[in-house]
Image (cartoon, one colour):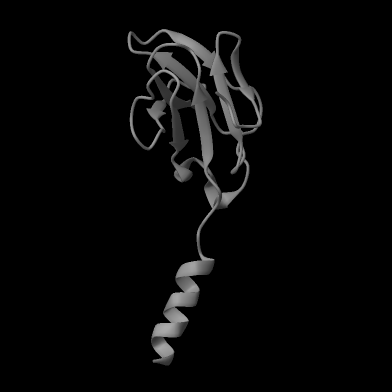
Length: 112
């Protein structure tokens, strides 16, 4: 009985860093990539493409040690590969990013 209680406590307290959420308000499907500015990029949304007016969660593995990171930019591309927006500066666990016609920017939800 004691082992079950300890296991339950560990499962509840070890949740990792809060997710980064991307809000797509571009009117088209987007794909979000981490771009290290040296020619390496990989898709980071947990569900692949993000439909217009939908939200996506960024994979937590872009945060080494669960802290803020400036090792890559987030880049939003449409389905043809055209860059629509790029982050500037650090990306931190718990950030919310809005992608719309004016680009990528930190934001505070909720959005329509």
